Length: 363
Image 1 (cartoon, helix red, strand yellow):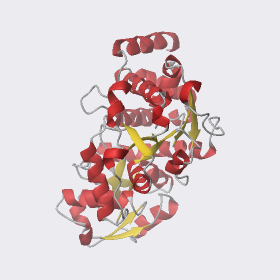
Image 2 (image 1 turned 135 degrees about the vertical axis):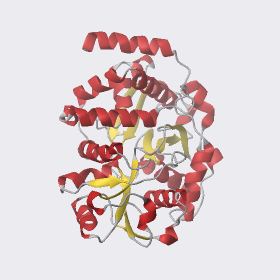
Image 3 (image 1 turned 180 degrees about the horizontal axis):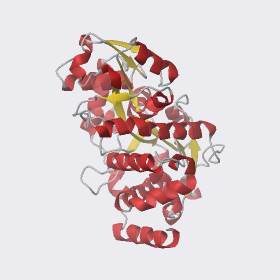
Image 4 (image 1 turned 180 degrees about the vertical axis):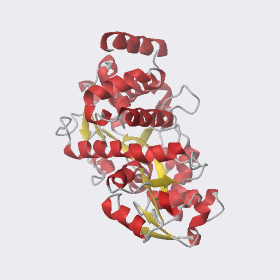
């Protein structure tokens, strides 16, 4: 993604993402004591970074349009924050599944033989989610202009790997820059950018949220070519996959994602209802929904959650390269592609009919 007005809009819209994170940390009314065992119970507990928000609006659609109910499944979404190791919650049986960033998922899988990833969440690409930003007044328009400069990182693993990949796209490497882990975006990071202590900052939408509040206008200069990096997916255990509840949840989620792409008005209306505070600036909320929708689009246009091992291998190689992982996960074991056909076994026309009926009742 080259520098553009759209990129600047992403950073402005990131303020909405901050609201999602706050909601997730507070937990809202989506809390629970853990899974109830799956199997015949028809109940599943899923850890999500921001339930009832724009960021996970496909989960909301699946619930509001009755897709979970169609699967005879009761879904409890448990809000988590970045400080909570979601993979550990899955492995320890606190939740049945969790939506986890690719770097965290791979690092956890390298240490555990029990984790499985049956669904890749954002197959449409990562460019809308990630960014490498500079102060707008700096005049920097290209990553090559950062040679020899100090670049701040939100995290020492995912964001370092992202920077390495971005530099590679423009013929550079980590040896051509300096890096400092400055932590998640906030006022102190904004001050570091303004003062020149760091010339640029690598992170995600959530990390950029506080820059506008601090009065710092930023420009995203991330280059094209990062579509091959996975963002993350739903992680569960081998034992949980022996039952049907995880597959039912993912099938309902796929229906919700399909409706979101084909009937964007549904996504708007359900999120206006459950996350009204995120619609205080409608143009920005709409922009964010459109951008997030692009990341949810299937590779082939029809197969939701499809897993491409080469993308995950590429991400793992980068994490090992930058020292964020010392051992590699067994991807053939961790990536569970054999359930994708079952997850996608539902009637598209029927899902749209449900959406249209819902729109008729709710517009």
